[in-house]
Each structure stands twice: as C-alpha cells, then as structure tokens.
Image (cartoon, rainbow, N blue to C red):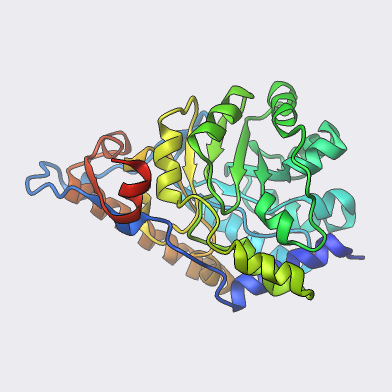
Length: 347
C-alpha cells in the first residue's frame, strides 16, 4: 500500500524523466581551465582514482540521489546500483522517508545493496524528518541499505513551494550535531538545488558533518517541479517567483572550499566530465550527477555504464590537457573565472 509520500516520489521521478525540470546555469560555463601546451604526461597514464571518507574509489563521480520509495522506482535504483558496483563509484539513494513511514516500500531501497554488495552507498533522510522523528529513523535508514554514510538533506525552498511541505527549520543544526556524534557512519549534509554559502558551510561543519554536498542552483529545479505538481495558484506563483533562487553550483563550491574541514561534493547541473574537472579545480572532492544520468538509467545498465564511461573519458581528457596526472594535481590546476561566477566570487 502506498501513501502520499510514496506517490510524491513517483511524481518526482516521472517529472524528471519526462519533462524539462532543469533551470538556470550552474556556472561552469564561466569557469575555464588553463590549457597546458606541454602537459608532460601520457593520456594513458592519467589516474582518476580517489579517496572519499576512507574509501578508495575508481573515480570522483558520485551517482547522486534520484529516487526510491515507490514500487515502480526499484528497477531504476537497481540499475544505478549495478553501475556503482561495476565502476566502484559511490551512489546515494533518494529520500527514504516513504519506506520509513511504510516498511512495505523498503524493497525499492534494499535492492541497491543486494545489487551492489561492495559499493559505497549513502542513505538519505531530510533534516526535518530526522529532527521530528529522532535518531531511530537515521539508524533505520542506514540499516535499510547497510549504508556507508548517511546524507541529511536540506530542501527548504522545495518545502515552501510544496503544498504539503514542512516549513520550520528550527533545530536543524543541533539535529545534525546529534547525528554526527551518535551514528556509526559518516554524515554528509546536502542541499538539493539552492546551494550552500560560506557561512552555512561553516555552521554545518562546526556541527560535526563529515562531508558537505553543495547541491547548487543550475540543475534540477525543485521550484519548477513543485510548481508543476501544485494545483493551486498560490504555490504555482511561489514556484515562479523563486525559480531563480539559489547559489550557482560553481560559486557554492568556491565558497565552501574556503572553509571546509571535510570533503566537498559538487552536485547541481554537472553534465559531463569537463564540468567534473572544473568542480574539482574549484575545490570539490567529488562530482555528483543525477539528472544527466537518469535518461541512460531508464534505458538499462548497459546504457548507464556507457554514459559513465564517457564522463570518465571526458574527465581524463581535461586532466591531460591541463597537465594533471591525478586528482590531487587536478585540484591545483589554475583556472579563469568570467561572467556571473567572477562577479559573485569577486575573483
């Protein structure tokens, strides 16, 4: 039996798969990596392996949270997990709220660990739900997929536009602190489309978060999605008014990198391996992708693996052309900033 939360998850997946839900620029077109005419390395020797929260990974590509919580989403999660296992890259599941409310829906999540016994998997629960239901929900979310980390997501713009949204952010930082102090796995705090500022990042890291996912503006627009779901003019107008709200992903990464005390994941509008390279040069450790992988994921494991292979090839090409033989060298590559990103970062 499915409920309101579960049906909403299926609505989200269908909207992302069947309509244009992206909006704005993540800022990567304003970032230009400096070409090295004498790279002094061989393309065949480029090493894109990296370490993240104590795990050795084959590439800094994170399959970002997409779905789960409805029986019809299980096959997509199975496909995503198969790719994560094959490439030895991490994967995050969508919000587990529906399955925490109704354990009968857990299969759409447990399938990921069944399919990917060795992959780095991240659970997912909203900060509001964790605050309201306590650490028991966090423990259950981790146990559900035998998670290697738990993402605590922040989505207050979405909640404001969503007709049934939660509209109180009181106690969020203390909730993060309690989870970080108590859980047996690392805590990743993630935004979901509006970005994280320098000041917010300082507060989140000070609360004990092990890693931070900027979830910036310029990719999937939850204002756009919730406007499409809304049946009343008030929330539709809210979606229109706040369509451009948020910090572009490139700007958010730049700011967060200045105050980081743990790994940074760049998600929000990354479309290819070149965007991933730019994100890492700006200060990210991992490049998260969701919407750009979804069409391939809906076509099966082979299509998704082919897409990821292409992204890794693009990343290696960018590294070769900047003379960066490995990820640590890429993090030191010089870059130019133009346009809006330059204006917003004052660089």
